[in-house]
Structures are given as structure tokens and as C-alpha cells.
Image (tube, rainbow, N blue to C red; front, side):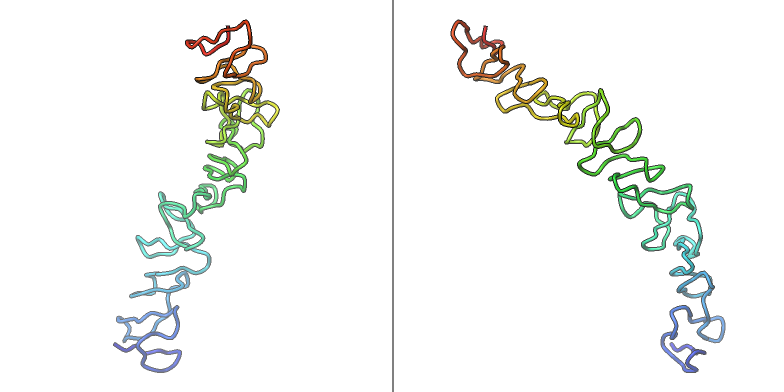
Length: 219
């Protein structure tokens, strides 16, 4: 099982340099790998790892500058992979199909580093412009559950708060629905009734008013 190592002038079980391989076709001499290979096996061009900032195409055991479709160059492992290693990276077709980090405000992105598909908190995704914003443009509202700018808040017990960066905010616990601010109730849940002025939910309607169970309002 020995190899002739020209570097040490000895018969060895393993070649002394990682950039050499045991060449069974050449008198069992430790021969150098191809210059593109950092390490190799069997032949000089059957690469196991790559040098010179190249990527390993594991299908062919070759080192390439640009991975073939549908693969992407992983800078961490220097291999051609079907998917980028991190959700905060995208396959950059304009840059030799290398996995590239999204901009810092993007949680995920595609096409380019600034084309966000989701945002890091506390930012919100504007779908139209693909950017992450601190405040959604009118008439959109920022939903905390999705970190997206949307036309309506996702829950009936939320309201679009124009005084707080256009964020969807939960109504006061006494309100079933509200408008304008958290305490301006527009409907109430049982056992409360809606008092029209001021718009609040009360357990007992004021004098001269009767609580209607069907509408949960003081009339």
C-alpha cells in the first residue's frame, strides 16, 4: 500500500503533501494535482477540493470559475450546490452564479441584494418596490405578523394607526373593533355595549339608553 514520495524520498502510506495523489498509473509515485485542485484523488484532474477561488463541481470532480445551472457557487464550502446555504443569500446570475448576501435590511431576497422578499424586524416589506421600509406608504399599513405593507390590517380587532408609523395596532381589550385609535370602539363583544359618544364599550348603558343584545349598542 506504499507510495514513492519524491518530496521526502521515502516510501509512505500517505503522500506528504495534500496537493499530491498516489498515482497508480505512474509507478505508484506521489504526483502533483492539477493546479486548479487543492486536493485530488486517482488522477491529477479528479479534484476533491479547489484552489484559486474556484468551485468544486462534484458531478465531474472539476474546479470551475462559474457553476453550471442549476447550481450556485457556495463561498463557504467552495462547492457548486443546488441551493445557497443561507436564507439570507441569493443566487446571483450577474456575478458568476455565486451565492451572495442580501442587503442587511432584507431577511431574504432574490434577483439582487436589494430586491427583498422579506424583512428583518422592525421593517416592513413594500411588495411594489421590493424594499424594506420603516413606515409603509399611504394607503398601506404595516402588519407586525407578516412584516408586510398591506391595504388592510389582518384582524378585525386591529386598526391602522396613522400616528404610529402607519402600523396595524390592536384595539383596546374592551373593543371588538375600533377606528382611529385603540380606545375609539366601533363595536363591542358581549357582555359590553357600545356607547356612541364617546365611542366606548361599557357594561352598563347611561341613563335614557337601553342595551340591545342583537347589536351590542346603547340605543
